[in-house]
Image (cartoon, rainbow, N blue to C red; front, side, top):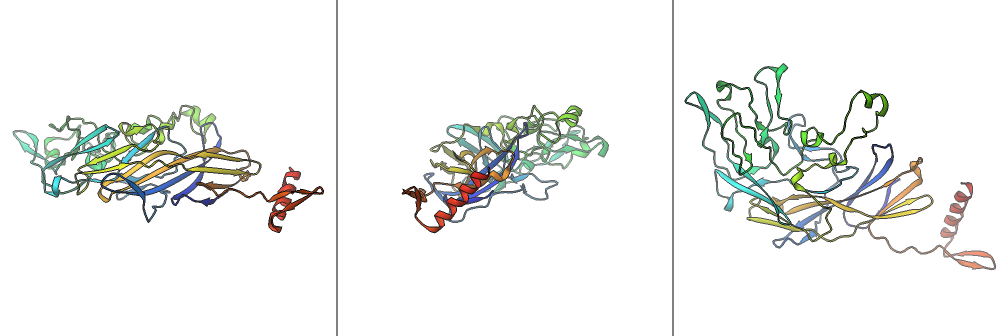
Length: 371
């Protein structure tokens, strides 16, 4: 089982995944890296990025959030748009705050980005310090509301389950403990942090970790019944939306091409835009006794506006039988028309184009007769 041909000019890979019913599938993912111009016209980049096989983090995997998630999700019931980028104030001039925007076909999402602030003592309590001006700031979840409060000791740590890597979650810290601690840099424009006990909505444009509450809600139930009757398979109430890594307000119908994405104040230019290409990506699964051709579904768009780049993923899968080896090969992209090895019969005898065609035909007939 291998990808025998890929004519797309993009990267392709395959894996085997098992669903909650115990059925095995061959999953094929095609990844295209594109450059975009000022009008949003996208062209295949000269260098194609490899597929992400394991999660890649911004730093230490134990304490930092995910930059790129493994791209071999078995399926995605919706399309999603992810942003790996930073906030850059207009003109690149230092600013104490700016607002960035992601616009997908008129559906907008704004995040207010504020320079570094800390809680400082004032009149028996704490107030935010003045923000430090910045010229760029990463749009990562460790700068959004969340994190943990360990002020009561390791045995009583309070965790913000919606963003394990964030900052500003202070349900128990005293004034003395709050003094000098950080505030979030990323906030909803209509939900600024005004007090240390505020519980904001964590905001971001990137990958939510699998252990975040937003994704765990779809992971299913892993109880004693699951251990006794279902393990090692997924639980019956597992929901494929678990494989969606973007925040839910960045989910869309599967992309067909022509959709416009705009990123505001995330590059040296005020706006970077992308018009998704209309591309058909056929994928042929060549089994021992049949061939199944499916079109890849564009279900993931990851944009990096600061470098005018985007990665698009097309995905499809086919169910496998009991013998995984029955899937001989996979062909990605349009393939040249096949020439029939058998020219016809003369006097009841088969005639072939080449000796190799004759030998291949004999071998295939022999395998068919044996089965």
